[in-house]
Structure formats: C-alpha cells, structure tokens
Length: 253
Image 1 (tube, helix red, strand yellow):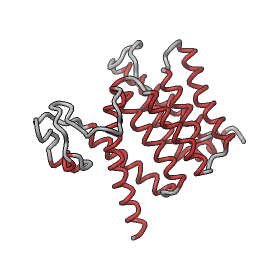
Image 2 (cartoon, helix red, strand yellow):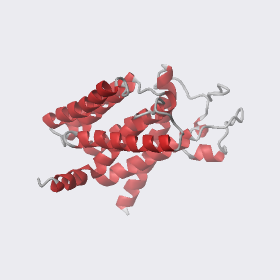
Image 3 (cartoon, helix red, strand yellow):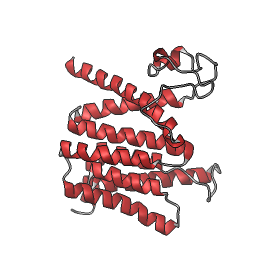
C-alpha cells in the first residue's frame, strides 16, 4: 500500500511538473522568462486563474476551450502533462525519488520539453541545454551513479557522433541536437549515452524512410531530430544495459 501511494504521488508530481514544462515550451522559443509572470491565454491574453491550470483536469472540465474566449486549447498541454506524469511514475518505480531518480527525471523532463519545442519550432534552445548542464552536473555529483570518466566519455561519444554526422551530411544535423546529445551523455555515461544516440539515429532513419515511402516528406525536407534523440535516450536509460549486453554477447565479448 505504501509503495502504491508513493507511485501515485510521483505521478501527481509529474503532472504538476508537466504543467511547468508547458510554460517552458511556450515561452522559451519566444525569448520570454519562464519563472516570472502569470500564465495567460495565448489567444485573448486573459490571465488564467489557478482553477484554470489544474493539470489535465482543467482541460477536461473546460472541454478543451478557454474559459474566457472559447478558443480551443491545444492538445499539447494535457499531453505533455500526462507524459511527464508517466515519466515520473516510471522513474520512481525504477530508481526511486532519491538523488538518482531526481537526476534522471530532470533529464527526461528536459528531453520532453526539447522534443516538443523542436517539433513546433525546429530548434532546441541554448537556454534549455545550458540549464540541463548547470543543474545536471551537481545532480550527477550528488547521485554518484556514473563516474566522472564515464560521464565525460559519454558526452564526447554522443556529441562527437552527431558532430561527425553533421560534417558528413554537410549541415543535416543541427547544433542544438549535438549539444543536447553531449549534455545528455553526461547523465547516462558510457556506454549508455552512445547507445541512446545510436538508437535515436536508427529510429529517425526508419521514420524518415516511412515518410519518404508514403510521400509525406521529400528528400530535402527537414525532420526534427530532438524527439528521436530523446526516445533513444529513454530506451537506453531503462533497457540500455540489457541491449548492450545482448549485443556484446553476439560479438563474443
């Protein structure tokens, strides 16, 4: 019973964090501060009350429309909140909510925000990557689950691999993707960081082929890489060691 209550609390906390991530996703690409200023409706500009901002529940009670101007609210808001809640639940179940769990939930929250920003604006803001670095380093020191050498190799292998792809493709990989991969590599360390980056590239490649075959995208059309990179790191975090051991066994190591 105690464990169940703990997981429910983690999910609820994740919903609240998801509400804040929506602020980050909306304001950061516009150069606005994320910590100051009350939330407003992007259509009518009306200041939202606390009962308009209850994660998921407010969206359902308002039937997906602004209370003041009746303009439809993007489904992105409850989706981000639910995803954040599910990530918090998964991290709490796997790592607990100690230093290690906080470290990885913070990483996944940054990746979640980066993914939605990249999908909408085709950028990964430097402020987001810098925040991940400045908070991630002390969290990593506190958690002490990844050695300094492993973290550095993870960052260099992840960022270096994407930098190599950018050189080969002559600009096919954005600088924001490279920086996000390098910072995320600090969290996971070697070899999980490199595995996550590789999986992200693999998933993006498969999705690109599907888009080409269905003619939804052309060869020169840009596809945001942030969501695929984030998914790769997510898989590496939860299942990476098993995947790495399986691959090593195939090679006879």
